[in-house]
Amino acid sequence: MTPIPAPASTFETWALILTVAVTAIAGDVLTAGAMRRIGDLDLIRAKSGLGGAIKAVVGSPMFLLGVVCMALSFFSLLFTLSKVDVSLAAPASASLTFIGNAAAAKLFLHENVDRRRWFAAIFVCIGVVLLSR
Image 1: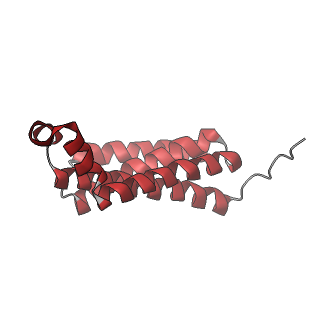
Image 2: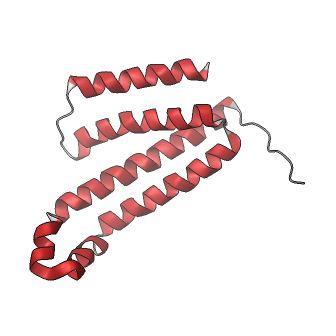
């Protein structure tokens, strides 16, 4: 019989949740940035075929780094769920990712993030704060 792991401390809980969020944000921003650099895949496919489109994507180091970050996010979420209640871990990591993606999109991808998106992110965070108590 496998022993049940001890619940995570408050610091460990939030460190694990933050790890999930940071790796997810990095993965999202890197893959989005890579796809913008690569360009329209329909045009690439029309010119070079499906193989050319696949080669363009897989040949991008930025895209591959994004995929690695997404994989790290997935496995860190699995580890987090082994130590933290899913009722806290899932919404907390999702809300931090939501806010982080908005900030990273504005900073690194120069996207227009309007007030409505910021308010939505704030309300999601308020909900997570309410859940964590």
